[in-house]
Length: 302
Image (cartoon, rainbow, N blue to C red; front, side):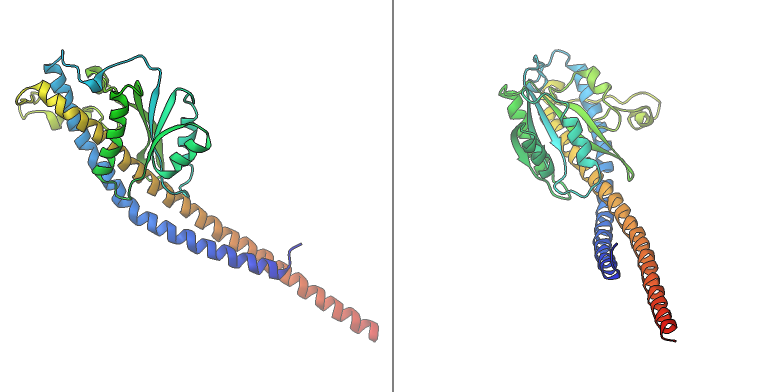
């Protein structure tokens, strides 16, 4: 049975831990709002870009960009967007479970975030490149990652590239999603992209944004022509999808960390209450025992 000194020492230890988790919760909370706004702000741009590509594809059905070339999949490339730090709940664990579903021998990984590279290395999978990104991701960081993936695809090192990232839903919910990054899908794929994903299609709720006042759908005019536009915009489209995935992952990370640290702080407070109650009970029992010993000694002497 622990002594009162042991319980006091443990109470002090838990209080110190609670102070740390509370501080981390406040820091994550302050960063979370900015990251959420950045992730949500990028989605309308992704919708408009998707709409432009769909419109340009209609005007150039015979155009085939190297990034749209479909091949039999023998080697798969995967970009795993994870976090640099831990203490963010099950965020990285959920990502790891999804990564484990891919065949080890036919999959080459590129990671954004130290946790992803550590997991890939620990599970003895092929790691082609690893990147890190800031709390406020820069487009230059996404472009560097995208350039590596595009080069791997164009050189024939991989036959397709999948993107796995954590999509921000709300503060309490973050969802692991997988989408095909390369080759860029055709018109029907762009139209049926999963809602909420980077480069998502025009949803019914957004149709009014692309509708003229008389109810007619807006038409895009391309100069010099749709083929030249697609040749220039498709690499940028891939860059932006990676950038949006970084923003979504960072918003998810801060949200998950804030919730995890809040739960840790609440658990620490409850543990302190339980330990304090146990300490008081033990202290009262010791006092009662001493009183009984004194009373017994006095009765024996009388």
